[in-house]
Length: 272
Image (cartoon, helix red, strand yellow):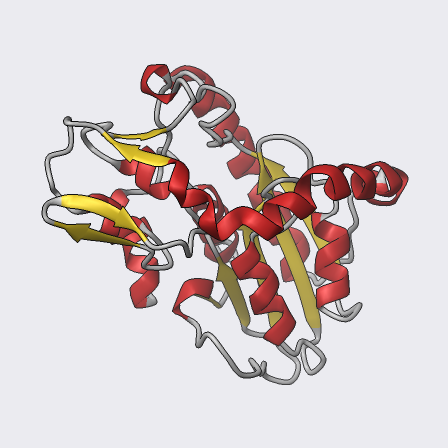
């Protein structure tokens, strides 16, 4: 049964391997009325208006202790001032860093509530994915947390994670050391991707890239220096043919949220 909502909700989302999509679906499914809108399907320029009195949510992952570049750019163009309630939900494998702080700044202080949801990480460049059993346990806990978040959203409750301000100085320091570099180099980091002879020329990598950064050239994937580092291409390749140069990714498990499909990820560019 849906939670009685004071007004319609619009939840904007961005996801590479399904975590944020699953969170957005769970929250939307517990509200009386909610529209799920992929951020990558929105116009790439111009202001984004919202209806007066609406509930507006943004669900996305944490990248390098901050927000994905595409989400930052979306927030810069979003005008939440007519909304009655604005919230952010961040899925993460580690720590939120300064992501909530940046969201508040980008939304010009118009942020009523923010939550973090721990989910399996997908940063295969640095670590292996969890086992299927451990993944399922963590995903189930995350689902229950998203159900509690939906209840708060339905009642338009305010919320701030307790550690947001306490650890902000540390988060800002780490972001200056790591996150700022990521923001500067993110979109050309696809030069690290490599393709082995295991490639079957199926085109899955091109279909699932949320920003259309991958094309198939003579049967092989080609990247075009507009990468968001979501790692959909490497994790969702059915032949495990995409690797990262200089990293032992061939020996690491791939990850996709178990309650989402490859087609779910591919459909976000079509606005589905």
